[in-house]
Image 1: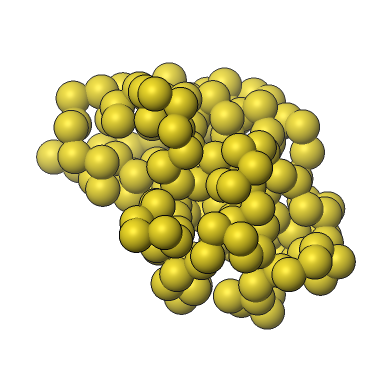
Image 2: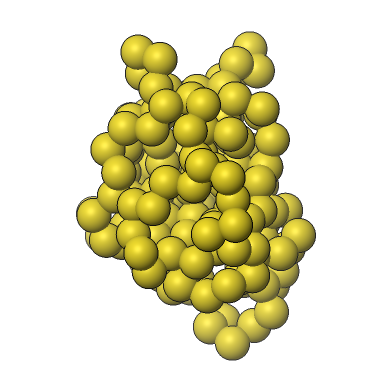
Length: 161
């Protein structure tokens, strides 16, 4: 069955997040497969915001392993102690990086990525299990509105874990 989303392309960030969040909730509500849900969430976010790259890294065997994503080819494995994703995962905090070239230890999966936001994902026991990673080809592309909107979407994912 084909799914579609509807949103106002020219609306402010907060409004677009408010429009797509209930649609994501409905999209993943009846699906129990984590991979399918992460793939659809990545697709919705890419379509709604035209991010350079949006996807998930999942904790497996002591590192973050590439999961469903939309965008250019990505790094496959990231150590828990490496890069923006590893830092967000290990410190269990949302990270907004206005200029990735100024982040110590940044991993350049794509030279086009200039700014990044990463939101950790937790299981029901509050153990970190992965991250939502979003890259932009613009400097300082992410704000508190993105952090709030993406964190709400991650909460929907966490409820399905």
